[in-house]
Amino acid sequence: MKVAVIYDIHANLPALEAVLKDVADEDPDFIVIGGDVVPGPMPRETITCLLDLSTPMEFICGNGDREVLAQMMGTETDWYRNALELWREPVRWSAKQLDDEHRHLIASWPATHRVEIRGLGEVLFCHATPRNDTEIFTRKTAEKTLAPIFEAANAPLVVCGHTHMQFDRRIGEVRVVNAGSVGMPYGKPGAYWLLLGPDVQLRHTPYDLSRAGEKIRQTEYPQAEAYAHQSVLAPPSEEDILEMFSRAELAE
Image (cartoon, rainbow, N blue to C red; front, side, top):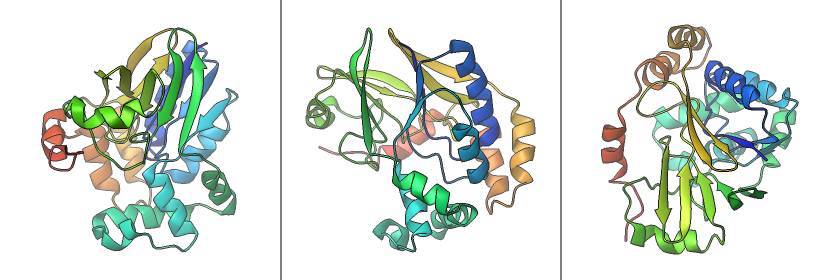
């Protein structure tokens, strides 16, 4: 069995389309979409692209999806009340691009998913950590801080995303792999994803960044220019993001 794993698309349709071409070449048995399909510049088109695939899929819900869903339902979450307008605006705009069918779809996505994969055993897919969709940790976060969280997952392999940087590390007896981000990577430009079975392959898909940036600028997304530059053409370095996340990551 082969499983393609796609996280943190953030409605970057050109990046998703490039990844799906590579995924098709691998002919996986199914695809896991690991959360944060939205918000982003092409939310409706991105969801349509995924639903048009013939390969079986399993979705899990990310914090971005959850916040967009809350806006669609007219609910103001604690996060939304306290967040900077810079962060709220993409959520609000994305919610307005979607309809009731999308609302029901997103509401059906679970927080986690488990599957048995030959060579890897049972794999737990979550968005951030097994216990919630917002906790921040990186390849540098202390093992003793993370061990209680991942030992409780009761799986030899946990796949996560949320921080948009790939890694493959051990936390006690658990192998923890971050899929990276398709649409908003930190580090080298391109789209990041995983192929699972019989082992773990960290994958990176280059695509036409200039063309993608132009397509994003042509949308009505309120932060289109910043997205095109910071998420596609010249993402922040992994070193800078690791430093920033060190002030927000899980502490002992």
